[in-house]
Length: 185
Ligand SMILES: Cc1cc2nc3c(=O)[nH]c(=O)nc-3n(C[C@H](O)[C@H](O)[C@H](O)COP(=O)(O)O)c2cc1C
Figure 1 (cartoon, rainbow, N blue to C red):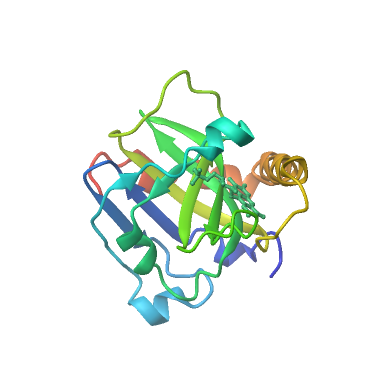
Figure 2 (figure 1 turned 45 degrees about the vertical axis):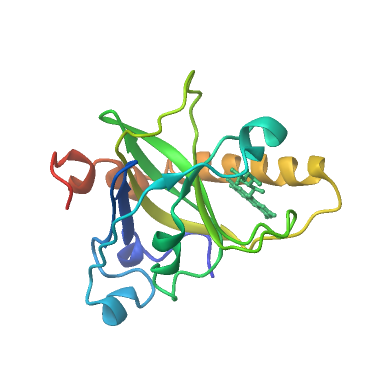
């Protein structure tokens, strides 16, 4: 899969979640073949859950983990791997990287969806609304021979996301109505 989707495939899979509710929807229905499978829209309700806490403690790269029921209801066409895009929190839109899969380095037994906002927050934001639009794919999940190698790779993912999201077509998505609408779509 190419790192940057073809232009008409840009916005595509977006989701909104907070501690009490999760809404996933396909905003344009052009991401891979999601729309044909899910009728262009998919909504789920669930909660953000804490992961194993390794993101902050071991990696220095905190992530928000989504509830298992949300992960199990993700379209099967959304392959496991590392993605990038935009995430909105408290009215601000931030660059983000996301990991979907089993974290082979940690040999997780359950699939997870984790989002890392490329911004330093002094506190956790559990319970607050976060909206996410995935705009591109970076790579498949990998195993690593050391924690340092995993950290180096994630930092490289962040650098790729930082760069790709500067593309005009990506910046346009930062202002998508999904982020500006007050109500959950
Ligand atoms: C951008 C990004 C890329 C990642 N890539 C991998 C990977 O290739 N292999 C892997 O095992 N885990 C990968 N992870 C997942 C981390 O291992 C995970 O975030 C960490 O274990 C923290 O999980 P926790 O919050 O459940 O403790 C990635 C996470 C992010 C945010």
